[in-house]
Amino acid sequence: MARAPKTPRRPQRAARPSGLVPLNLNLPPEIMDGLDAWVATLNERLAGPHWTRTAVVRTVLAKALAERGKKGLDP
Image 1 (cartoon, one colour):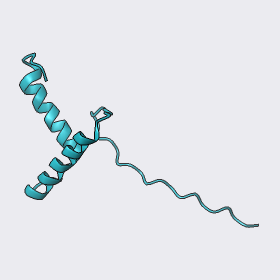
Image 2 (cartoon, rainbow, N blue to C red; image 1 turned 135 degrees about the vertical axis):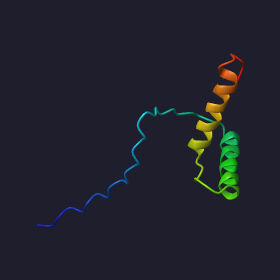
Image 3 (cartoon, one colour; image 1 turned 120 degrees about the horizontal axis):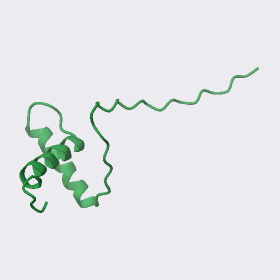
Image 4 (cartoon, rainbow, N blue to C red; image 1 turned 30 degrees about the horizontal axis):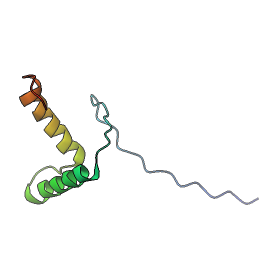
């Protein structure tokens, strides 16, 4: 009896670090292009950890909350 071909497995995603909550955004292409360019510049220029879109957005949002959010200022 012939065996059915095996279904290829999807690659597993890395586990989400504990304590983080996902946030999904719909952004216009020009913002994504700017974000991608910024990430590329950071990775070309800086030594150290590799930057990702997620890391840049998380860092920018944390700074905005610390500098403007706590004071009740507009974003």
